[in-house]
Length: 431
Image (cartoon, rainbow, N blue to C red; front, side, top):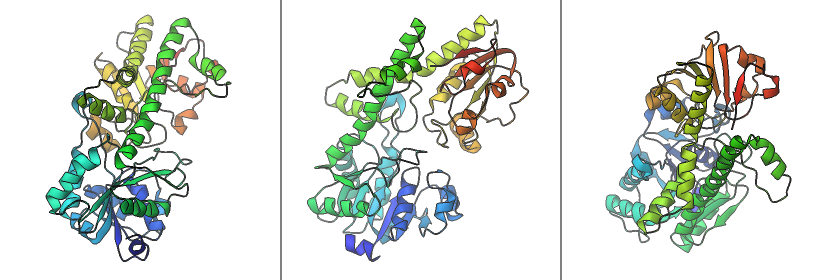
């Protein structure tokens, strides 16, 4: 199949054109493959056809000379033999893995899959999902038999939204397959677009586990620093100063305290927690860290309330700068900043939210929030700098102070405002 793909006798289909799938489609097309880009969101497809990149992962400039057949017609998948599934794997109520997007996309692929196809999953899952959940769906809705009529592989995404250094091309790609031949084909196909090379995992389950562990490790380390930050605050010690001092040792890993949102670190641990629980083992460290990190927003709300009450302000006017889950990306999925906003709304405070990166319609649909662009001369009591967008990093202390009225409470979650430049009457807090 690899030779047929290279010689354009067969096509590659990417199912799901979001933050993961779209860059993959672009890179395969750049490498000379015939690429079909499928997504059920017809509005998104129209944007791609018009040369617009709503993910901002690739940029409209790089789309100009790239040939991809964008479509929301699932029947087009029939033209491809190498099919990459890159759809979200969120969690639902009680943080239970929501496999519906993966299951639904598997049904779509199965209904349009030709014999001899290889289906490669990129979505983050717990070990066993590809072979125990996706394969039966592919068989049921295609009438084909696994291994005999089609094969599957798993190659977890490692894209870091907004990162222009560690990209699809520069990070080693984990690949796996249900047979040695499948593994070889999957490896060769990805090697054409990943300059860093590939790591051939011995099984699909190992590859699935490796991906989820990557984010669990980061979650645990951030959780530790979040706990330390709370202790140091009570001790009157600056957490950053402590991290900087400890970081002078060669084997110390630097992590900063903060909110843990987004579609990876704040979600993926629940997948392994869920699977472990099904097996009769309740993970202690992962569960404790998830609770700790998910409740950082409560700590921030409590401090806003405390500062406001100390200033004698019963109903503070609050401005929140930033809503996306990290800096310089439009991604609002699982934004823990919304948890802060929700906590403040429960106090019946007046809140304005601004974010130049977030899509206004998406924010309104997802969170019911109308973003504000005009927030000057509003005399806010509290300003929360929630996301370290470059536009906010460029703010000077005097710029922030212009946003206040008589009361001046600055909650600098990311610690990007120089505290020493602020007036003495500004009450300042950071993690």
